[in-house]
Image (cartoon, rainbow, N blue to C red; front, side, top):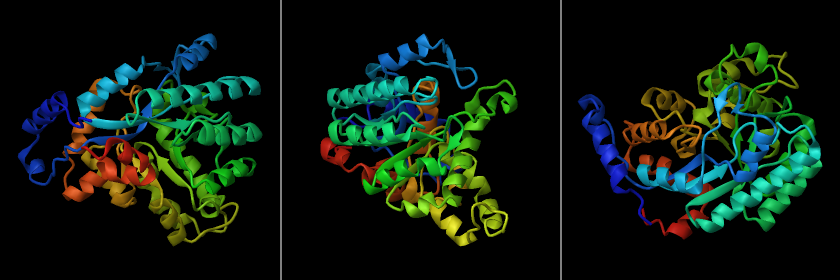
Length: 355
């Protein structure tokens, strides 16, 4: 499998020509094939469901992009991406009011993603969608998507109908995923109060990074992360605002007002360092440097957010990643693919690590 094609190489060379010399002196140019853990799809049935519900835009006005496997693989070829792990983005299935409709659509989405994996072996992975916040039905879907469809993990929105992930009602879901040592891709969605605080602008602009931190705080102080120590959680967009406020959270965590119970500062930081972080929309040097203050390099992976990020934004983010300074060749390759292969080792077997 070609891992870094001519268009991608030409794009990188063009980027390096315009990169300031001072930055180039500190950067190692990683040209290995990438594993993208944050890529989305819009299968035909999902797009139809959005249309039937009257949704022309998502999350406060964000446009619904076009998507097909062919468009995705073209982006991969242009940017040196070996594998994309697909998922359905916000609002997942929560726009449907009926429980049964959510269950049916989640099953259809998972079957469609499994088909993409079969049609493009090694090129696509897939995270299952759950009909949250409905617990019993989600437990059934977890078993089906893992055991029958062979999907790679699960995508869970930061809140479902306003219910955040530390809610005790959702504990059986995390317990079952913990038993399976599952990988969870955490994806932001708009908070229930978005109409009051969104300022008329799309939720991805600001509320997504905040809602990521909000639900992680809930997972920490509900002791979900401690109780479910086998889980591997991937946070998008370099953790949103979490790295910037991590020390603030740790400072306040021992205070008696923290509910349901205080925690030591050291314990909070340890739990946050144990999470994984992707670089979708966040591979620029300033954001990466902030992320490094919290996340070990072994916990950082590549993401594109395609197709919700258009081709030009994907190319810019990947070029920024390949030019990141202050990393050894081994560290750069780790973020590019090796860290993801620890979570999804079967992709190494498929592509033979040809990149």
